[in-house]
Image (cartoon, rainbow over the protein chains, first blue to last red):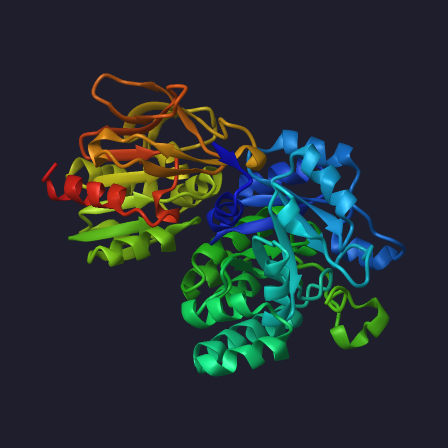
Length: 293
Length: 192
């Protein structure tokens, strides 16, 4: 019996596909998410919208909160550590979380290096803005990728930009002749073996979710139609006026993303969505997506 | 032969690809009307709570039960197996209850306890089958007509069949080995 293999790490992400992973800050929220049909929850102390509003240094959550959430639900529980903070990751692995998000939503601990994730038995998910960044993270051992989007804004525009960038580059690589792949790898700053793999397979070697700015059922379905495998919803559920109804609606829209009638139906009477932010109004030093490389 | 793969949530594309590699017509199923005319249905791995709620809300539970009465075969892997069981430790789950088995969810623990191991499966021949267990359930109890197809070294039951119903605690769709899918197709066609 072998644990912590690449197959079981990437395999868990495959089981999450077509589903919604929701940010939760306590066991009550976690139960609401599970009851709404979330396929996993992300255990946090504060949702991204609050982290953005409060400023300061955002760190790994208190293990008490994470453990209480792990006890409350039967679905997988993820938790975030800071970029490059491998000791936070070691602590999360010891707690038994099912996935670690090395996340730009928290304040980076290392401005040059991400965690060497192959050293861990617990799988990691990492954010990306383009294919090169995705393949660098996979090279370091990320078993799942997500778009960065711009967390805590309720604005889908950045997630769309990142998803389109990834999908466009994949299409381009598929049509790139073999002899040009090495310079592509150099240009993208990505490991050649992974560039070659994407060229051959026409897709990422791991599951790719959308994250950052998903606030409505239609946002979730938009990302699915753009080719994502599933959706993270951060502040979008619990910063809205009716979290339970919105959570259920986003779950249904993610499954039935190609069925406009169902999207319209589940979008009715959800109350207020989370307050949104125009990305252009955010000072550049407060943007989260450029954190990491 | 037409096989549907329940696509409410989970790893359904992997099953569809496996079936297509075997030359079978395969399609995703999200609504009850898509079950009509199917010879077989695969319920994939994923989160059983999530799949179960979507099955309930879109009235798939009853549609599957009805179609099974008219001879449809069903193959469940991991979460799919939980959804086929008559009894599980998830009190909220409204499953179609297709097999006389009792299952326990996340029976081996959390993700850090997920594992790979080789399985001895006599109905598939001598070559061991690669078992990929991810936050896997196990089968605690089987009723009279249920046949045990595979056990772990400690004798835990991980693969069962009852007539046209086939259920596994692990994920053949994540491996390169097509034998369990071929075995299911034989069950569907009545050759086994």
